[in-house]
Image (tube, rainbow, N blue to C red; front, side, top):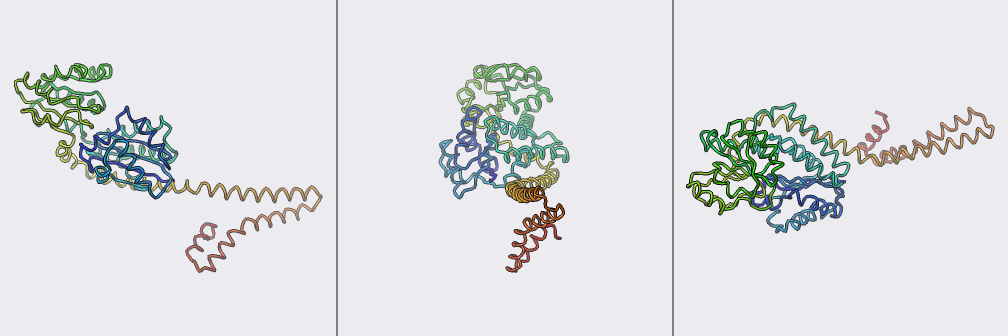
Length: 418
């Protein structure tokens, strides 16, 4: 059994490719079933966020496995392999375990140490568990990663400052508008990222918040918490002109805000500037919106400079966290290697018990026939010793004949002679 991690992220691929490789909540179950149907794949977890799409797998190793999985990913999304290959990374066993721990701990995030990713990893694992697609080793790897992420949060300062994609979006808004107390903000979506944005905005006493979501029910809970108005996505077109800032993060596979919609809003606004921050993958706002005069569009990738500034504060903590990940990866791999010996240990124990039972049965038969008890016990002990040391003795003799000192010493250690 081999553990693998295959994927792309914000470091290896632009948003234009990441959005084409992402899995939506609606397609995830089908994707998992398709992935598990691939030869040699024993279990899998699909992690798909705005910054990464990754497959975590337990597989039976084979020579062309990498080609098979890359082909599946490209075929599933109907992509040219040449467009994807240069952005893909591939990790195996120790490196796969270390990578997942780094991801869960926020060490591989666009925003170093962001807490959101752990919840996303847990959800991806839970979704895969629901489909019964997680093998024992894969489940243990994810559970271990969750505990490592908790340890990193507890023992380091990596989460001390409020840094996230949501925070970066609010920072950008504050850089463009001197005060948020005089602006109206429209939030599109009601997921975890938008929840964080809404809470940041409430802290900065934004004048008005409007939350647009596919269903009112989900948005209503958040709206009550932050004092916002709720509308549906169908209302966005006629209400967009009221917003000075639009921040969007939905799971929609198609853009929600188009160029024409923004042009109509700008006409009603008499061309007063509007800031649009699209932190969704796939994108919620058509890229052509950036061509509309006085409409300033920023994508996830455009937040990078803000994020890099905040990352500087977390580098020392990240070094501590990396040391924790290295230690915990080593411990997990030791456990994993021990599991590979389980069958051998079981066979060895069964063999010893068979020898014991056979000789015990003979001894009991001898006693039943009236033979001397001391003689029977002495014979049982001698034969049991001979049977159990026969194979190790031959191995020691062969190592000595071969002049293999390293093997001879290993056997001595295994037999408790040193």
